Image (cartoon, rainbow, N blue to C red; front, side):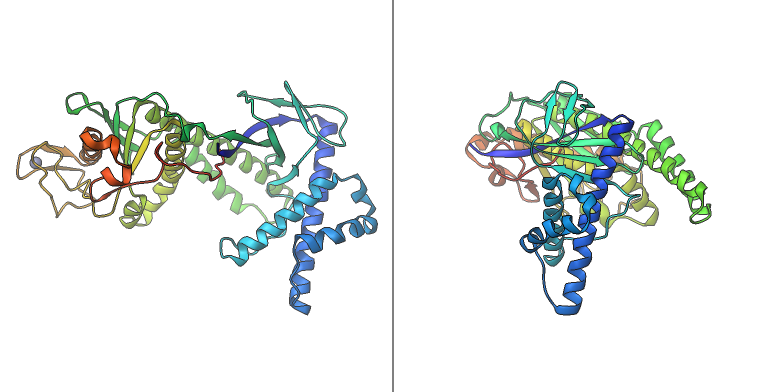
Length: 411
Ligand SMILES: [Zn+2]
């Protein structure tokens, strides 16, 4: 049986003493990371020598002798920092990431604790710290914890990420099936329009607005950002403001994630088949003002959540490709007129063929819903793989109960 790796994230509430302990440990790791980064840069520049984890790990004990404060550091965490540096370099050389940055105190900082930690109820025990740190477990988990990461945000809040391994049950045992189908059209003015139902006569199309609190928070964030840039560089005021800004930033990000999680969970609960557009099509239609709202409404976070949850619950997700005219085709059954000259600014239109009046976005999500319905009523479906039963212009994203995967997911 295959396994998958997951991370659980929880907030921890260290007391004053524990905060100074954590900050020290984080500082040691930052020091070691930056030291070896600088060394790698120098060796490469002056002698054309490449370093790696193993050559660095040999030097680490010598470094501890030279810098005696490192004797208080958790050795395994320092080794993990070296591994992270190694990964950062490898990602750079394989063109997956930029050149590694020096770690700064004002940014998010973390330490890894690969072993010897315990979570007992609401108490977290870590090496070299005698007292237990208070942790709020907002969900229970039963898996074996493989490693732990403690993160300090610029806001001064602390979190833990627990890496666990789960058996990949969903690749083998389909979850309870539902017969709903959803088409979703991601929007600019509204977050999305969703059409859901089990057949044509009971379909419902709903506009899901961006929540008011989120719009308000995002506007406030813009104002705060403007105020921040006006503060004098290096002033006490600016430092204080930076903290306030990052607290607010984090809150907005959490609110947004929460909204997206609720919506994606609801969709996966209700539907066996979900049909989406390819986000690149949307990207092609963007101008500057649109692209701003695109990033605001976080489509990619949302589709990522959908795919991840659909995979877990054994639902099928399909993406229509760029040639599929979801906005331009008339969704009236039996019509299908293709309105070639439909502009992005046309919010409503009347079909010249059948006379139906369409709301642009609802028409698009209705079309995606109808495609989903087509996929479910094909009688031979059970004998085919999703790739085979999908009609031209539609592709399975690969996230379905028919596929077995071994890749790791982060929640
Ligand atoms: Zn029509």
